[in-house]
Image (cartoon, helix red, strand yellow):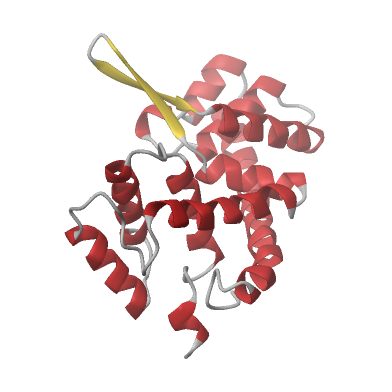
Length: 213
C-alpha cells in the first residue's frame, strides 16, 4: 500500500499544527479532543484516508475517538512524539518559532468577558526569539521587539498589536516598526521552513507524514 495511505498526517506542517492543538487538551476530555481534531483537520488539505477520519470524527458520539483505528490515548501518543521531536531535534530558534506560532492561547473569564493571552510556552518562545532578534535591530527598544513578535504571532484578534500602538508606546515612526516587522516575518518564515525540512526525513521514515515537502 502506498505510504500516503498509511501516514497519519499529510505533511510536517499539518503534523505540528494538529499535535500542538491536541496536546493542549485535557487527556480525559474526549469531546474537546475530538473538537480540536475536527478544527485542525478542517483547516488543511486532506488525503482520502484522512477525509474518512474526519467523517468518522464528525459522526462519532461514543466516548472514544476513531482516528483511523486509534483511540484518544493513541492519538495523543502520536502527537506527543511529534512535539518531542520539535523540542529535541531542532535548534532553539526553529523550535521557538513553532512553539510561538502553534502553541496554546490561554484565556480566562473575568466579569463575564473572556480575556485572551499567550500561554507560558508561547511567551517563553517569543522571549527567546526576541533575544535572538535584538542584535539585528539595535536601535529598537527591546520591549518593542517583544511586542512586535507578539503581534506577528497573535492568532486571536484580541491579542493583536498595531504598529500605531507600537509607535505610541515606544516612540518613533510607525513605518519603522512596519519595516522591521516585515524583516522579522521573513526570518520567521525561513526558520519555520528550515524546521519542517529538518523534521521531514525522520517523520516520513516513521510513517508520521506521507510526503517530503
